[in-house]
Image (cartoon, each protein chain N blue to C red):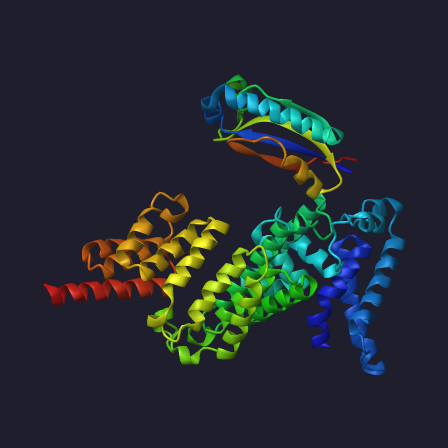
Length: 410
Length: 115
């Protein structure tokens, strides 16, 4: 029953929304159909096609609700669901027409805030409870419920349509969806070790969502790219922190503990994704992760290849954080002097001035150039910009190493 | 079909600095916008700059206070609007994205249907 719940929830809900035109009513109908299933299947046994059974029951309930509604309510159906007539005439529609695609594109509409997109996706597509979502993002259940309500209100107030975007709109919209799924993954992946199990669940849900997208949008390079990226990143799960919970850098991780089967899978996916056109940012990010994953050791990392990939990524996605990461890669492929120059070119970027990674990247290059006093200033600047305990410990450790080295050299 | 207001915002000092060439480009842009989207337009106007604005508020005692200038001091000021009709937000966005908006952008807000 629990398995049916997890794997079928999105499918059944998405199909029922098409009937009700109202997310809340649809959720209730689907909830009831699952309850019916629980009651009925214990005596009749589990049907072969659980999804179809649940969908039929949910939709029947939905039609009952519609019949009971006044004509006016029916006319004012909250969610714009294009009539079958419209769909048939739209030549741009992709051939695969699964309601789950409609649902995920609606949840991840750019008119909604990112937090809302993430919350809606987890609630409506993954079937997480409001409490679980709140816990994952360190927000109270009440606050998360309010966030979900506001998001649904925006959907109805602005008439966000329940449809799959046209071919022209698709690239930008797919990018939004992938950003949301990546955020779900990152939230789950960066949870401190031994913490709430909901966090690990987020990683699994994000993978499920990407796999669902791969079925619904086969041949989409960025979808394959994101799957590669999360697979490669998750392969390092065990070595992210040491026994005491201290964060370990890539250079410090025991690579024999990486999941090499997952790495092989990720690398294969990257090859597949790189053959698609155009090559999008998720493919490039995955490419970078693959170079790291395939390096037998930190010292053997192919930094020139990584820098070249960052050049392409920056072209595709001119974000200051990408520029920063590229500068760091240059520091490794061409030396700390070159890295520092690349960073200094970014010193006027408004987004980076308050960003502690920028300061700590400068500090690291200065340290490697033995410019101790400047390095100390930069580490202290970084320290002032972060409250994160794990990051602070790391920066404090570096500062201590600096003063120790100064003592030796004095 | 629903109505949306498309509010056009721009940095007035930057627009002014760009001079006549920009002004002409904007005019042409708005004419083209009108021609392409005529069927969806229900209204629209350019506004005179914020230097011509007058703000009315009530003070704590309820007295009307009249002051010079726009209601909110913002870097980008309201410069004009279009009232459009669209089948849904995506169509409204598709229309609004064609509105010329150098040195600023547009806001799309649904009209509240009362009663």
